[in-house]
Amino acid sequence: MGQASTDIGAVLRGARCAARLTQAQVGKACGYSASAVSRIESGKLRLDYASLLRFAAFLGVGDDQLRASAVPGMAKVATVAQSYPVDEEDDVRRRNLLTGAMGAGAVAVMGTGSASAAPLDLEVSLFRLPPAKPVPLPRLVQQIAAARQDYYAVQYNRLAQVLPRLIAAAEATRDASSGRARDEAHLALARTYVLAAELASKQHSDATWVAADRALSAARSSGIPVAVGEASRMLAIAMRRSGRPAVAVQMLTSEAADLDAAHDQTRAVRTSLLLTGAYSAAAGHDRNTALDLMAEAGEELGHQDTTAPGLFTVDATPAQVDAYRISVFNALGTPDEGVTIANRLDVDRMPTAERRARAWTDIARMWNALGDGQKTFDALQRVEQEAPQEMRRPALRALTAGLLYGPTRLEGVRKFASRTGALT
Image 1 (cartoon, rainbow, N blue to C red):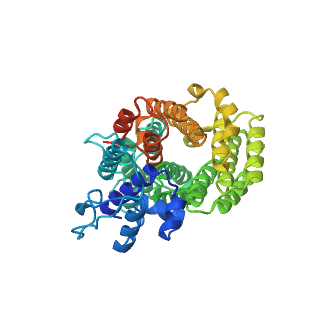
Image 2 (tube, rainbow, N blue to C red):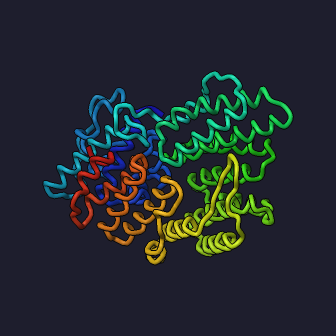
Image 3 (tube, rainbow, N blue to C red):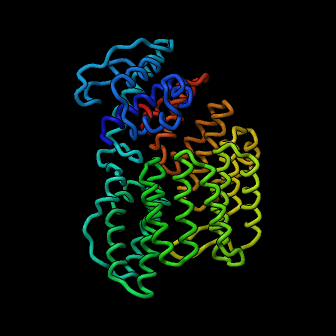
């Protein structure tokens, strides 16, 4: 999908957030499903000219905002009336936001905003890996470990640069190996594809499907249950985000059941699968299943060790379970049930910047749903402190944009929006 679709999607997303509308509301008005609106806003689905004008009219986007360069061959987009009255200050802020959104498409979703930020195009690179030669397994494992640290440290740009070459090297090493060494190479390859799936998932990219499927194939070939569990978890996340949460739950619970509960090394993975299953059930508005799976995941914590060693190190802690509880209540539409949990959660004790940023993101979403703009802003600032590149994710930019047009004027939010890419 070309840059034009990404730019237009960013404009429409910014206008929707400014109007404080949901994707479902916009879709209903324009004849699309909520999932289709999501794909339009992320640049995955291209609108024809007539449909674009329908969206623009409903969202109050004018021809000065839909720049001619955004759509090849479109010399002029018809001027449309503003659908939502705003005061003069908000009108200026809206124009600035949309101008920033137009430019944001040219920068990686996880970018830093600097000129050196590289595009994250896993959908292309996964199908056109660079040439590579086999490398000794110890060196390959060391390189994969370094890449994992980049993910945990939220160095997404650097990880995006090294992943295609790392995957290519892992495939070449697997192809050149035999016997036990081939099994170990399959395990290494599975780890690289899980990393690719995790990174693609951050930007809600369809590449998550490709990477997760390849990860699962390599994991099964390795014969390592922990690797199979982690790859299955990423595939289930892709299923959930494509609108099939019930199928995702079924897959996650089946994989968890297949893991040997008596084996310490699989307990952390079982817990991780159950937590992801709980959130998937919540996304599908299945409260009973979501709470049952959360309870089961909590019970697993009573059976230490909850850490899986090796290339697929997975840890499960009470803090991680609590963070998931907040996200589950958010998805169920009962964020108030997460307030007590958020107040007791010591995010600073969580082991990685990526996990701490995720926890603060869930807390920000909770306070936003409860209408507390200041606490939402406080939580988003903590996300930025932990992991600046996380704030470049579309969902967090949209959350920041929403604060600009909320009922409460928040000191510093405009500078924050500018600094994090929601407003330039």
